[in-house]
Length: 117
Image (cartoon, rainbow, N blue to C red):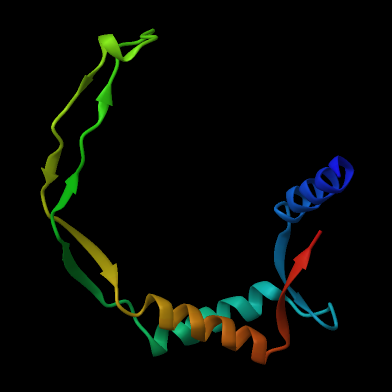
């Protein structure tokens, strides 16, 4: 039982170390050149469109605070929680479409995003 569990755990840990790269079937193509051209096409089709969005306020619940070296809750205290103010952040409306077109362009040129061990 323990042997199977350890082998399963080892397999999961090794799977987490996987590395992925763009690879071409014939191996002779220049990725940098194709990547640059695909990025240019994607940027022309979906230029950056930066927008602002406001995130709603959020409640941060009560938390325990303990001084360094405290071994029991008798020296700790509980705060009452608080409301966090709304935040504004910038985002690019076209980022996902641009990335999708870039990947599609590379795949159309014969590139595949493959696992490399």
